[in-house]
Each structure stands twice: as structure tokens, then as C-alpha cells.
Image (cartoon, rainbow, N blue to C red):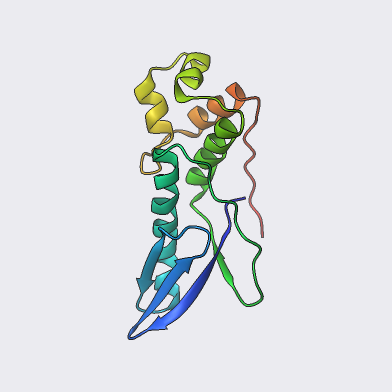
Length: 139
């Protein structure tokens, strides 16, 4: 769902990683493996800027031949899915808090991609938005 294409470019002794859909997300690594590992953190940081400024999340571009893709971690994908549903429905954080019976700091933590929210909280928020959380392991 949040699988973004990346470009890997040799830059001196490092590999530079850029996301064409999220220009704020730039990182590097000593080799491809390290660069792609660092790309997850850069992607999550870049997407957090959209969440913090209450903007719609960028739609991932189609993957071009030979490109790699990077996704946020599973927990962050779940949080971003709830955030996306909230923005698509035009619901503000205060309304979500009211629906859940939560205080605003709880909702703020839910959308903090650095906070280790409980899956039950994310599931409750999804249900409050008329959505449900699906977890699966894919090959």
C-alpha cells in the first residue's frame, strides 16, 4: 500500500537513495543493502512530515523496470493507513478522539511514527473510521 519506488545512485564511496514521490526522503549507505535499510527510516521520516502538517500522503508512483521499492515498517503502515482514511473522510483528530473516547495526546501518539503504538489502538481507530485492519504475511 505504501510501497514507494527508489532510485539508487553511486555517489563517490556511497550509494545515494532518493524517492521521487517524497523529495524530503533522502539517505545513503556504504552499499546497496545499507542504503535500502536506511531508506526505510528516511521514508518514515519523510512521511511523518506530511502527517505533522496534516497533508495528504503522496501516492506511490508505478515502479519502473529495474527499480526497487521501499515500504515503512508494518506498524507504521498501519498508522499511515488510519491517517489516510481519516484525511480521505475529512475527519480531524479531535473528531477521532471523540469517537474513540480518547484524550488528544493519545491520538497524537497514534500518528507519531516514532511512537510504538499498540496494534489494538490502531485497530480501534480504524474501526472508528469504518475501516478494519488486516494483517498478513506475504511471500
